Image 1: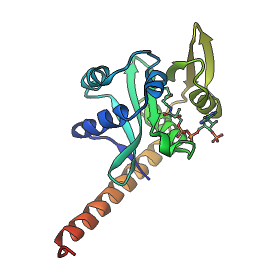
Image 2: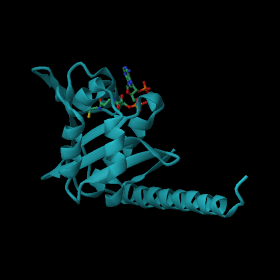
Image 3: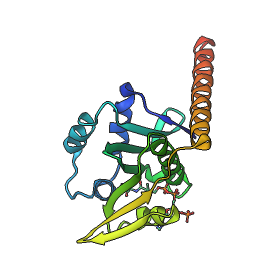
Image 4: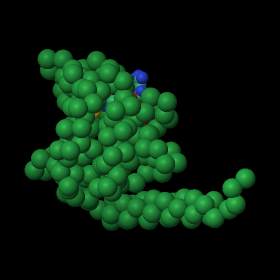
Length: 183
Ligand SMILES: CC(C)(COP(=O)(O)OP(=O)(O)OC[C@H]1O[C@@H](n2cnc3c(N)ncnc32)[C@H](O)[C@@H]1OP(=O)(O)O)[C@@H](O)C(=O)NCCC(=O)NCCS
């Protein structure tokens, strides 16, 4: 699995990933009851250029993503993983990276909203030490974020270099295959 930030021009992959979610998952992801394809199109079109979408790729396919948007010093995160790839730690890894990325941008709290019967998200939030407030069918999870330090900065730079190197190797392999005679 390759974890890296999505480029602006890769947002179509994010759109396709969200559209692969079932009606129930869409409801969990957006804490909203009627999320059809048009709703997803509007959501993706409305993502600000400086929001961050952190992706997990299996080969060329985006199988998990965390969208992070800032409201002052609060970083709001929405996360989703393809059903076939769940309970393998992808949600945890995306959230850990989101924590590091938001700390490095001096966010003071990570926030996520979900439905109060969303057991997987609440399990993930508890595992990461988030504080959960339930109210009227929804649950808000907060994580206070310490300021950045040398480790968070060094880790982010290292992780990005790793992502770029893996991406580059995939490109080289694909180009080598392209030059081989067709069998
Ligand atoms: C929530 C979601 C992102 C979790 O992704 P994931 O890759 O399966 O998560 P992980 O494998 O890292 O699991 C993390 C923890 O979540 C909890 N968890 C995951 N699935 C669970 C389930 N079905 N029931 C209970 N707890 C669950 C566990 O505590 C798990 O930790 P553990 O395996 O060490 O016990 C995924 O289920 C999903 O995409 N759901 C639909 C969209 C959504 O609900 N998004 C959240 C709202 S923004």
